[in-house]
Image 1 (cartoon, one colour):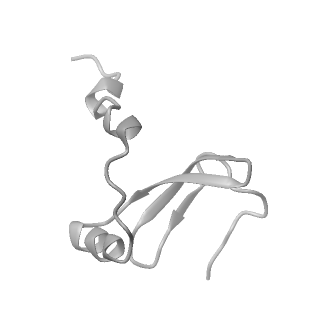
Image 2: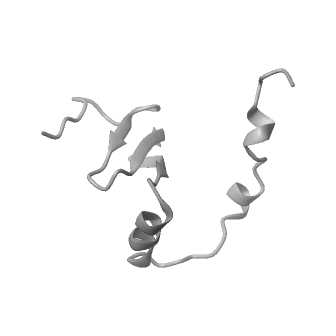
Length: 75
């Protein structure tokens, strides 16, 4: 059974797809929704993007620091 919140998408809303992909809402504004998707494995990712049109590299995202920049644990 599919369950959706009875409101507009909100930051932090999380969905799990039948193929194991997890999708989390990052932001929603002006009728558009930005999400982040995590695929359970490389083959699932490749099957999904094989049906999409590759548009190159988004420089704004590519220039973001890696995960270690957000690690707040003491070393």
